[in-house]
Length: 367
Image (cartoon, rainbow, N blue to C red; front, side, top):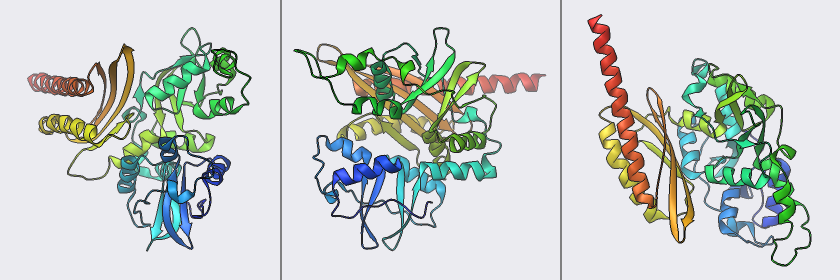
């Protein structure tokens, strides 16, 4: 953990906290009264509130701080971080703040622990990453990042060769510039933004690694170059991407648990919807547990209007077992049907893999 966290007092305002977040490049700020923690203000929480005046009191935005102590093990804390959607968690002893644990701190531990020196990057990467072309408009990259729930996407040229990366930080300053006067029927400054190409804001050279690299090497590169993602390449072609979130999921997967760790992202807070989706997942996992040992299931939901008032739901999933990773996508006009279809696809993939292993064993014994 980091022992000198940036904090705020209950009397400070949203404007004060946002200033600290920008200056220190952080997403969570503990609210401290005396030496005791009174709550936690997160960037995600601020964004969910929408249109909050800068003068709003910090305690109005604060949420209860998760209980994390210095003696907790990393897999358990990583799981808590994922479940709450946090990028950092305050560490307390008897409600007194003694430090903060961020994704970067966990990545630093991964780089130092020998347990990850044999783990291959193939076990954590997202294959066939979505990319943008260097001549695409910036707004296209922004929409892609929003739809994928990612902070960074690779940039390629017309031949599909990696030439850079573009992230939320690269475009944040662009949209903070003073807006030009709007013409009739035009959003202020929108034409100027639409005209800017990705190659005008992308970063290069890109931090890359080969598919045979180890997880601890990926962590080292993230720390050395201060990046949140590393692109996996075959020659000059991007074949995968690894993010800090992927590494957190890897650590959380090490925890011995009775139930699968499930993360569903991309939806607004809808408790009833979440519960019904979890019900669909639980039925499939009960079947699959007889074939594999489930570890983590991460699903990102993208919903958008496609025809009139009809809403299309597109799901991307990554399912980790004790032996391998499965990736799949599915979509439907109904969210619950999309989840049901996704689980059906997953079950078929795993059963097909089981049949392949059985056939291989039979051939081996026959030989």
